[in-house]
Image (cartoon, rainbow, N blue to C red; front, side, top):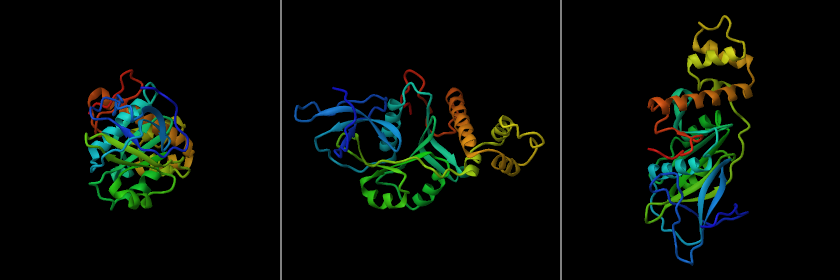
Length: 271
């Protein structure tokens, strides 16, 4: 299989085989009439390793598990060797919302899954909550909900439509590239931290004196008044990486499924 660079202004179908969820990409068709190549593509700001396929794919209903395995494995391949972690169910707004899959590196890049079998009644509210803390977001949606779902998310979100072929492989087609979120909410970012983490952040900015025994709400107000949003964002990413590594080491499932540490040589999707 020949590895080439990304196509420009290409709107053909993207097909990825993730049936084993091993982080490895597999050629789908061997027939000479079907040209297949590995492409390092970007979706919503994150590089997705996908397979480009000229043939036609049979479409079947997608499920959360099909899409989630594809995204996790793809992201693991794209970010392998980087100082990044991939987590499931990243809590925001005191747990009122959870980003389905998130990459945490220099940014928080979220992927919200809406399969053919999901409902969209919470999507607009989720978009509001996620937009307060994520630097980039991508909606990964089943064909059934594509038109309606796209109307529910902001224009800065990327959009990937997903179907599955007869073998259960994820068929991914990017229909909109995302862009950087310029409207992060400082308080929402602060509220992703636990109390001891919040005290540590204040200490890093020399703002903790006289406040270590304060209530959580007072600590939030102190950080909001004394720190820039860029500094808060950087600290939150650092803490989330620490949480993920601890969860991986001690088997804590705080992020849902197994954490992927991309810095490890064999970073794969290990459900």
